[in-house]
Image (cartoon, rainbow, N blue to C red):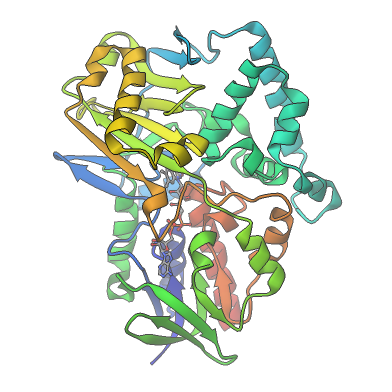
Length: 445
Ligand SMILES: Cc1cc2nc3c(=O)[nH]c(=O)nc-3n(C[C@H](O)[C@H](O)[C@H](O)COP(=O)(O)OP(=O)(O)OC[C@H]3O[C@@H](n4cnc5c(N)ncnc54)[C@H](O)[C@@H]3O)c2cc1C
């Protein structure tokens, strides 16, 4: 039996693509490697309360995700941020209210000037990344610019922590072009790092994965779980998709998987060489999420918001993660970038103790007595291989956008890394799925 379209991957990109194609009357199948849908969104219910082990926040300008939630009857709620915040510089923890942390004026000024300059560079970046003005940024890492703009150890550490928490990677691991492009697709640096008004503004009642569950439910038996795609053969007039036990046939295939897992699928004839090289230059970031559940939200009672930033790790940041009405009290800590490389290989007990000690330093000794600790290390997920996103190394991004989104024969490509709005986020996944579905419909017309 020949299907019109096979979609590989049932994350938000794959499910958006499949929904649009099914709504257009096409015969579509979705093949998902895991035994669940949602990909990088992963909600577990523990002691009756949901926690998001993957993507969880929505920003005010992420209009597709907001519309999708509204359509599915899924509500959002404001991330808790009332109270003082804490900044840990390794030696001591300082608390502050508002947006400006209590650090040396020199460090603040340096970081402020650097961020303003990067915002300007991102805002004026040509949309066409093959434009020479854009390409000029692609042969350096962000570390190069950091070295030209930040001169003190303190300002560099503050800057690094912001970069690390957004990308799961260090400035030396990011093409400057990728960094600027990422900023641009989300509307600037502040839009990425802010809570109110930024990407962390709201959470989803019941968690993020139920959005994918609802989309999959609508698609019914078109979605097939535990079906890893191992190989794809484009025979010119038809495409064959090889799973462990079956070969399926379709007129078109849409690959909605991260770059690191796309590279593990044997594609014949092979992808154009330049494209393969660009994919190899998009390694996944590194993030470990650690939730500590408590009897009470003791930090709130002390006038603290739960927001904590550390320039020394192992957790780079923490935030209040209670339910919408303050129930299921929890703090969520992120171990990211180089700290994740090291600490994810360490003994679980030592890692947890180190993070809880950080929380105790900021919020009090109650932090040492959680009722439960739940961890998710995305490097251990073979169908994702790191997170939150595949980050471009120098000289990959221009090649990526100019060629990697373009169909190859009967193969089409989606996934948040291919998005032009909020790339790296759930919003980007949905946007890429809409684009891929339109592309396939035009091709089949
Ligand atoms: C810890 C973490 C925190 C995040 N925080 C946020 C946040 O707060 N807000 C936000 O908007 N975004 C956040 N993100 C990013 C967001 O979750 C992703 O951008 C988005 O979910 C990606 O969707 P996708 O469909 O492009 O890819 P994925 O969700 O990765 O979907 C790809 C799917 O393909 C499947 N697959 C892979 N290989 C194969 C194969 N060979 N055969 C069959 N199936 C395959 C995978 O199992 C997966 O289901 C976060 C991500 C993580 C992990």
